[in-house]
Length: 525
Length: 78
Image 1: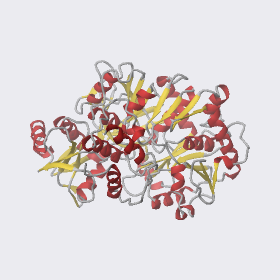
Image 2: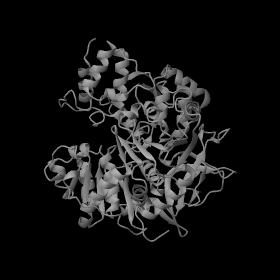
Image 3: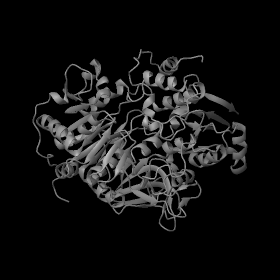
Image 4: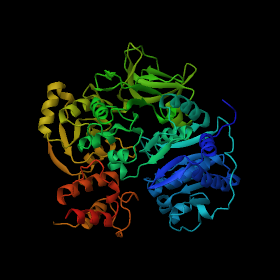
């Protein structure tokens, strides 16, 4: 790799070679690579002389301005930092204080979050999209001087490309610092098996705070593909979005597709345009695969696995015929690691375990993140030196089978001890899903007294089965201590900002039964 | 029908602690005023209480984003 690098180089190259190619379709508007580069290079020219810490925030998502902000920040020679639009004001302020940004780019919804109080903690330079409301002290994109950078400012490989915040289990989110080099290593690898080109229309289902968005946009830009941004509403009808835009490449958490399936909105050959369909972020159930195979007969399906801390993704399993499944969970295996990463199975003390034994998945990789921003303690806890190797401990449980294939078995946090029995909540999930006949089901440990789980509670989406029927079916396949004492049938399953089933919200529903707005149809105990 | 669509949206917002007035043309979901969970809830209400059929795979979801859109949709079906 050359010593000069900028994560916006690939975008710039396409913008120079093929400025008329479509780069972005968003809110019903189409932007060519040339269009976006004009705005981004203007923004970069304005930001460049003001860089001190080389960190620029992007308070926006699912908008053209957010993407202009990313390309502009990177081209100016800065790290880009997506800020979550769902953070409450207090958290936004805390993160601003922590980050000491040189500037922040806001779209029209981001601009609304810049209140008088927030402004006191925000960087002096705030640039908004032209469609944003007027906010004092915020300058609009079209009011910037007509000056442009000729090309992205080159940086060092070890400089940070981006900082993405992942939810911490307690308190504040942690900013994962990913270098230019790590992202480059990832993209080189991913390009080989995704092979995006100028004919591809890539759907973007994620907010910029989720690093699957990094995969989508940077691979699309390398290939000269068009990125189609889904609005919050499009997320409710992804099937219509894929059909309308004849999307060729899809990537999401399985829950999004499961929702469509549940609403009976999937059917044979609904998505003939799809050629590649990737799932990540949650276990991929066999039922989802079968539904997708029927709906998208021309698509290769990939299950990809990896934490933000190892730069997006580090292993992959293609759906084969027959598929390689993790039988204990009825989900697809997570496959084999990329050549740049070693996946190790460790016991609680970090000792390596032999094949076939279940333990925590630890990663050794050229593309491991540098750690968490200004969080030394948390960094030390997760990134540990074991026998001279720097390993990231994922908190995921898994094992490697005799063929070298990795199997995901759940989260270490979801492994609980109850009345002397060790229980993996994901294992109980598998049985609950079967019994309830829906993928939208989850088990939580509840109540927890002095840190010790006292029982299990199940949640499942309404699917024609009563709570008692579900419990009865589970009793047939599980020891009694693993059968939830209560099953709540819900109309909606709460999901977190990454659209995964939100166990924390489920626990909160149990803690504050009156505060939840999810309609309970029925419950039994 | 017991409730107007405006009331439905208002009560959904109120349930989330938001009592602000919204105009007919203000985006409700793409603006983040209501989340995706609320959109699901609203779609179910449209189907069950207002008799709107949203099963068409090509249904244009952007027709749900403002009160004006929603009233238009209900008007068409009536």
